Image (cartoon, rainbow, N blue to C red; front, top):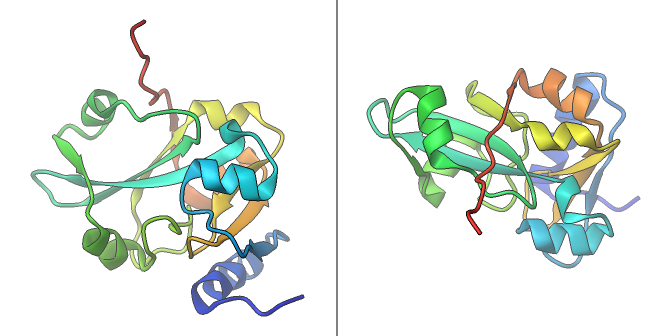
Length: 163
C-alpha cells in the first residue's frame, strides 16, 4: 500500500483510533467535487457524502452539512435548523475550523466539535464515500457509522427544485 499524504494519514489514524476498519484511498485524479469523486471511485453521485461548511451570520460558528452528492442544500432549511442566517464558509474559515481544505473536508476529525447535519438521503445506501483530508483522498463507509462518527443529526436538507 502506498504512503498517504499527511492530511489523509490524519484521517486514517482517526479512523483506526476510533475502531473503524475503513481504509483511506488516494487517487491520482482529483476527488474535490462530488462528480469527480464519483467518477474516480466508480460509484453513483448519490453515494458521495459531500461535506459543506457554512458559517452562522450572528454567531460566526461553523456548521457542517454532509449531503448526498446529487443534492443541493436548501439554505432556508438550514437557517430554520440553526436559528440564524448562514452563508457558505470561505476557504480560510473552513481550514481554520476543520484543519482541512475545501474539497477534502472529511466528516470527522476536526479541531473543535462542529454542529453537524446529515442529509437523510445518504441513509438509503448500503455504502457511501466521504472525503479524507485532501482533494484526492476518500474512504468508504456505511451510513450508520457516519452517524456514530459525527454525532450528526439526520435531517431533510435537500433543495426541491420547482419544475
